[in-house]
Length: 112
Image (cartoon, one colour):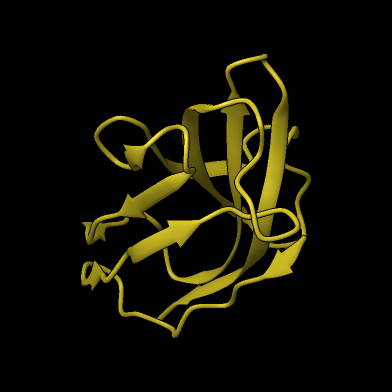
């Protein structure tokens, strides 16, 4: 899994998103096409499965764009994240056409 720690943003400001995401394994996309994707923000130090850990998520097709499912090309457009001030863990997850869920990157975003 790759670490991704975006620059802090102020509460209410637009997060710039991630313009281009390409998932490659040994220089090639996974065999099964990507079916859905999401980025989840949850309180740092909390387990994603705990309640109320999840603060906000962006999902496909609106919050995470799948540009080409077979080549695993995606984008996350700029968005206003409805998160309180503090540190938020994040995880980018996909589900492929075979139903396999995988976390590709994770990190921390600070809301000032």
